Amino acid sequence: MTALDGQAVPRIPRGVRMHDDTVRGKTVLLAPERVIDLDAIGLAILQQIDGEKTMSQIIETLAALYAAPVAQISEDVSGYVLGLMNRRILEIKP
Amino acid sequence: MTAPAPIAMLAELTYRCPLSCPYCSNPVEMAAREKEISTGLWVDVFRQAARLGVLQLHLSGGEPASRRDLVDLVAGARDAGLYTNLITSAIGLTQRRLAELDAAGLDHVQLSLQGTDADMADRIGGYNGGFKRKMQAAAWIVEAGFPLTLNAVVHRQNLHQLPEAIEMAVEMKARRIEVAIVQFHGWAMLNRSAMMPTRAQADEASRVVADARKRLKGQLVIDYVPADYHGDYPKRCMGGWGLSGLNVTPDGLVLPCHAAQTIPNLVFDNVADKPLSDIWYHGAAFNAYRGEDWMQEPCKSCDRRKLDFGGCRCQAMAIAGDPAATDPTCIKSPLHSRMQELAQGFSTDDTAELVYRKSP
Image 1 (cartoon, chains in turn cyan, green):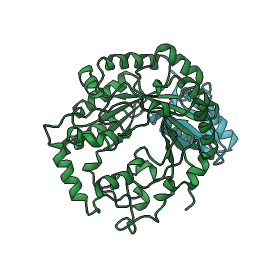
Image 2 (cartoon, chains in turn cyan, blue; image 1 turned 180 degrees about the vertical axis):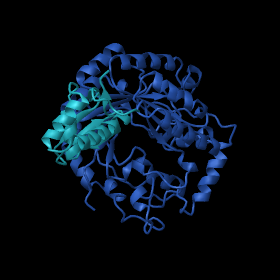
Image 3 (tube, one colour; image 1 turned 90 degrees about the vertical axis):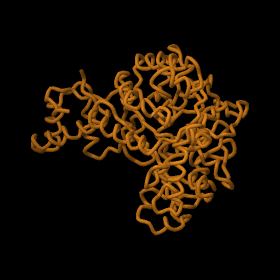
Image 4 (cartoon, rainbow over the protein chains, first blue to last red; image 1 turned 180 degrees about the horizontal axis):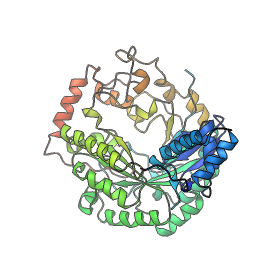
């Protein structure tokens, strides 16, 4: 899979959803046969993925929110999104 | 030890099934329809499970679509907050019923595949015309928009079709395929000589899977259960006994795994008698092999015990005659060479006939 284009719009596909796990006190992603724990970074990224914002917009928003360099945030976010795409947990809007 | 909360629950809604797959994981002695627990009790169990920490619910059987109240059960499970996965042969699923399941909030469908053509699939499933109906239903499932996983159980008779099964998953736009080399529990125990793969087949399957994972990265997720009679280390059965999952039978018994009833002397509680939480944390069957206290040598002092928990208790029972023995698949088991002889012997038996599962 090639690197993500800045104009790409990531989205959470049907069959995957965020869930507030009140028993364990954390937020998880529920997917087919998978439960993915979201750490603080994962949660921050997932909260930006709304099926509307582009990768560039998500990265800019997070860079501003965390007062961090865009280049670094870009690497983190792209790596995270690509990792979940390889597991069919996220997809790019066609 | 203090047990963690369970993550997954397998709800075997019924043992009834239109297919007769000879590798069925259901017990050889099955509870009859009149003993099946009610819609209301199931929904109560789903609520209890969610409160206990269960996140994923697998609705299975038998064929879960044989329960007329399947839509109500799915709605009840979703209402309880559970991720609902339907494990089905698709026989009995109509377009209308799928639309109702969709409206009830069903999250995901896992479709069984007995073979990649009608000849193979109908012979293994013991149901003429089943393959055609399954392919029709598969198209409806995808059309309705459900994420789809194919579940291909492979064995000596159909392992040559594995590459085709993976291609079918791609063509059907499945997100995942589970490739499971048959595990010998339940009815499969009666079919070891007809279904045991050869060593060469088991190795080839691992190569096919490794190649497909590379080639289809990002397109198709492949989960793989290798042939454990041919392995050197045991499977991490159930993610550890009583540590992550539980199974409720059609008549309400709560089991640490679907084959646990093959271990004599274990006492199982029923959801009709006790709260699920009590059963999980305090039930005798759950505590029997939880943690490490029950282990004997060579498990007791082995570094791998935290990886595989000594392997499968039911397999230890079946082969070693002792449920607390090291899983005989393990290279450290005194029975490892016996296991390899069994695998060799069963896999070269050309005369064995399939023993088909019978519905209760």
